[in-house]
Image 1 (cartoon, one colour):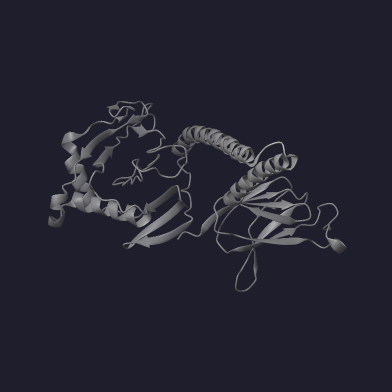
Image 2 (cartoon, helix red, strand yellow; image 1 turned 30 degrees about the vertical axis):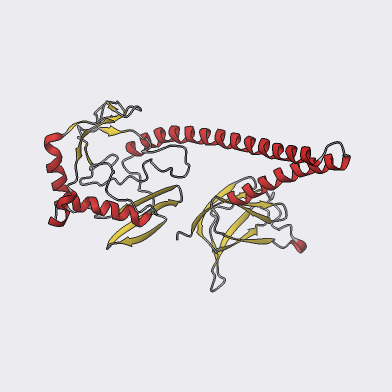
Length: 348
């Protein structure tokens, strides 16, 4: 199981602080925050479940001393738990408050129930209503509260989805324009069937992995040869089950039927397609079969030089829902993009 977690640290202490990882065996302090975390600032940290960190107050720049007893620098600790979206708030006195999405949701539910129960107890004490009416009002109170929470959550999802779409446009233009931009560093690296796997995002609802040498040159040649006679202008879904041409997607494409009946004979396209299913099943818990899945798609982009005003490209988009929610049965569960050739410059 993936034990990596993202932690957002927010400094509301009124003091400068720094964060150290505490080595579990030696107790050595390893500085994580450079520069210091100023009051009102936040700091993003990637770590693993059970890792412990120390938050340490820093001396004032003018006074040269801390505000602890005897002018000592105050410290506190927190340990990464198994929940997602963890937040550590450093409060006045260098007291850390460690919370996460599950804790916040549980507190919200508790607050709602406490409010509804208080109303019910008040009505019961007054004797103005019988038990049946009080239970009915308690139920209605909970329903109203849950409905309001769901409405707020849906509004936030819509807002975040719109932000993601706008960010994608900006990021695409920047990454393709900056030819010297370094590739994002992987969070961790693993192995699968002898191949190196870099893992960039590995959350329950979103995962980005890259696999080196996923296809052989022989398999790439087989795909290109099969696609050659049926290449046509690429299209996008039209929202009604069909497809249409779009300015957001300029390329040539060909749908390649996989002859699964020739897999045992060593058919190259069947072989690489089987590898696709094997990797998806290695990562996701759905145990998908080849029956009913989409055909292999060959996409070919043709470069025409750096001054091309309408280059072959596929603008940022989502292969499934863009709302960030958990996978829903019947939708695309994964996309594997296999590169046979990479350009000398530009996005790939």
